[in-house]
Image (cartoon, rainbow, N blue to C red; front, top):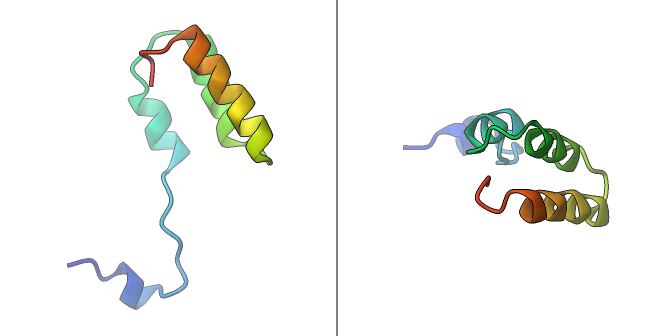
Length: 62
């Protein structure tokens, strides 16, 4: 039973960039850096730009 909504009714469920970063299946440092930059992007355009770098560099990395 998930009691988080009852205890924290205004909490938003998100994915933790730290845990996602640790699960990226790559040893390429550039991919990990690009993901970190994408995670901190302030706009959808910047996020997509950095995620495309990852897709073009290491398509199996995510």
